[in-house]
Length: 297
Image 1 (cartoon, rainbow, N blue to C red):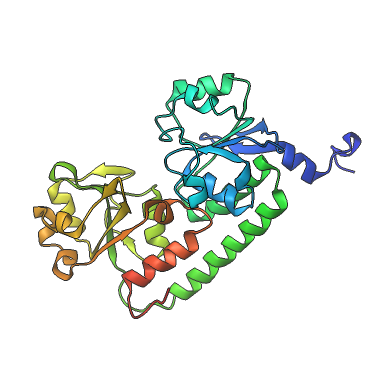
Image 2: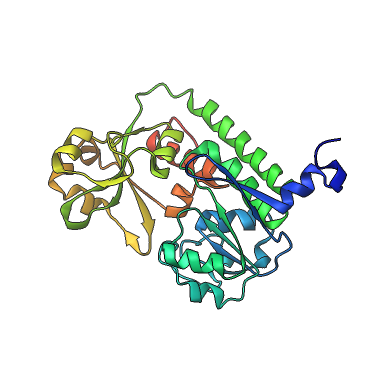
C-alpha cells in the first residue's frame, strides 16, 4: 500500500484533487481545484479549447478575448484580453473556478483574483509541441476529467508522431519561414526561438528564419535581409489582418526569396499558435502550404 493508502485515496483521486503546476524555476506546486465546479471562467484560448475538447464546455460561463474556438465559446461573455484583465470583470461572472494560462495579467489583477476566495488554477504553457499533452492533463485534472484528458493527450501525441514520420520523407530543402507578428512603422516584429511560432514552424518541417533572436522582437532591415525568408507567415485574425502587399512593400523584404515567389501564408492565430489539441492538424496544414505537391493535408 502506498503512502496515501491509509487515507483511502487512490492515485487517480489525488490527481483530480490536486493540480500539479511546474513553476518557472522548476519547482512543483500544488493547488486545490474544485473539480466539480459548474461556473468556470476560462482565460486563454488554448485552455478554453481543451475544456471544450474534453466535453466540458457547458461549464464555461465566460472567456477571455483570445478564446475564439469553438464558436460556442467565443459567443460567451468576454472578460477581456488575457494580459489586460479586470479582476472585477472576472469576478462579476460569479465563477466557482478560474482556469488561466500562465502569463495572464496584469499582476495586480491576478493577485486580486487569487485573494478573492475563488479557486484559481494556472496552466503552464511552454512553447513546445511536446508540452501539449501535459497541458491537456493539467486542464483535465482541474475540471475533474483525468480519463478523458489522458485519452485526448495520447491521441494528440500519436498524431504528432505520425506527422513527424510523414514529414521525414520530404526530400526538398527546408523552407526558411519568417513569422511576422506585425509590420508596424515599416519594421517587422518577428518570432524568434522560445515562441509558439518557432515551435509550429519546426513542427511543420520548416526553419525559423529569425532563429537568431529570442521571443518576439522588432528586426532591423539588415536582420530581415540576412534572414532571407522563403516564406512569410502571419496570423489572419479580424483584429490583425496583414497582407502580402503590405509585407512585400517593405524595402527589407522586397528582395527576399519570399517576395520573388509571392510566398505568403496567413492562418488563424489560435489554430496556428495555440499549441493545443488542433496543433497536429495545423502543422500539417502549414506543411502542405510550405511544400505543395509534396505534403497533402
